[in-house]
Picture 1: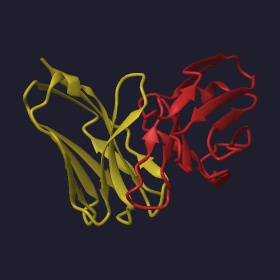
Picture 2 (picture 1 turned 90 degrees about the vertical axis):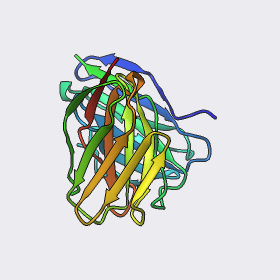
Picture 3 (picture 1 turned 120 degrees about the vertical axis):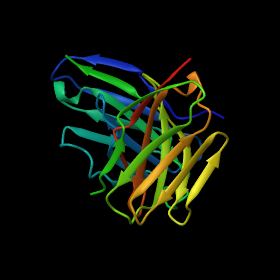
Length: 116
Length: 111
């Protein structure tokens, strides 16, 4: 079946602009996660959705970052007033429930964001 | 906060040799331990998940062990092939869903 998809695959923007990154999880997965991966590092957790609600947004670096999942499937990560330090690969993952120790997270290919 | 360390950062081996990748974590209250593969410019592919009550998992040429008491996991790849060249990451959540990743080990298998 279809895996996690993310659009766009690449996004180049100018400092100060607003960007939206989209994630389509695997159908039927109630849990959705956003991570950010800087060059040479492992991904870092940003936010976790259980259904439509953000159950944990403790990884969002500041209030310029916001994410929504209004219907419990597709999610959008929104970044306002982008800064060069926001440049990274933004990864989305989904899992069946997020509530059990055997719950594997399946990752999308990521969106590479470059802020000039 | 869970700290995850992977050693070595890079590894180069001739084809056919067995690979041993190490992962250590600071919080033994780990919920599970996952190993991922990442190809250049790509997302992560889950290879193996070891639940906290388990000691190892196997899939084909891959075997992963988990020792919570010592805070270590090891991924073994038998009879390596050039197609195994990638970055391998381990990740472990504490008690729940929030994965804490190591920086990865970049493997090159020479033909």
